[in-house]
Length: 188
Image 1 (cartoon, rainbow, N blue to C red):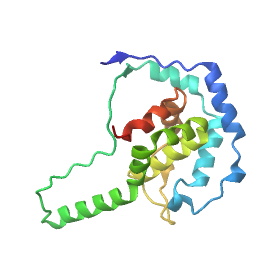
Image 2: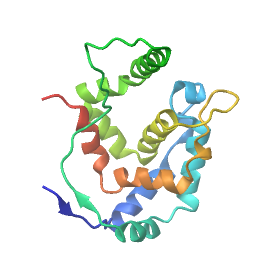
Image 3: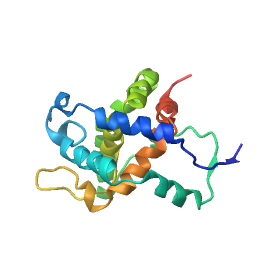
């Protein structure tokens, strides 16, 4: 069933999110290799600084509510379709399959976590807006078609603004939908 939806995050919820952001202990987060080890810590710090100093959720909320918003149940995650009885023959097809396999090999660890321990992940991200931001920012950095910097890390700022990224993050964090989003890989 599809139902209309108005985004209306209570002030108390926004204050709780900001308090957790401000209380985040960056000293407990060593940089273990930048984007090669997950999210780029410097990019995450840049995003969080913007969140604290410049981001205006109420302005974004008003803009989003000018659009038609709806809710429905949908369970889909990392769709990969490949016919079992087809063998790639051209160089282009072989290259596509090779790149697809590399992506699936490198990026399906998340699926395993979400399939086997979704609630654990949800609890962690629900408690830490910065943790949820790191998780989501890493997905944008790895899954978007971004140019690479000299060190091989994604140039996330070449395609996304802080406001665009934070709006995406806040749509998970503010209404606490980050918890149910992690359940998407749960097996019955």
